[in-house]
Length: 172
Image (cartoon, rainbow, N blue to C red; front, side, top):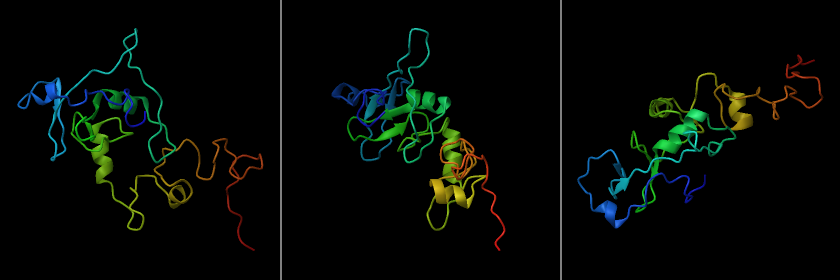
């Protein structure tokens, strides 16, 4: 969902009635974590279909070609809030701002934030990452659905129809 859509905003828009509850500690309200704002925001539960399941729309993680997991979509539907006063997106559980898109839990987002970064490009270095992942795809970590160099996921790395033939021949 793009910025400004009703599906992303699971909180009301910081109206005057919300600001009238400055000392609220109710679980139905959140406080904007932006130090320059601090508006009280009403937590509105996410929409559910008649079966009681969350109404989720598949989405890609911004800046990557990876799809968000169902768990990450459920976390986003329940915990992503946007302050109507300052426009800050944040997590209703851990107050991370901006919201940690693509993670199924706050703990996973915190662990990723602690991951070491490349000294040259500042990308996170994740377990299983290789230099080819970063060179070809701009990311890494071994959670890709296809091998590095397999652009369409069919196992054919060079497009000749013979499957995995990425083995380099010795020079000479």
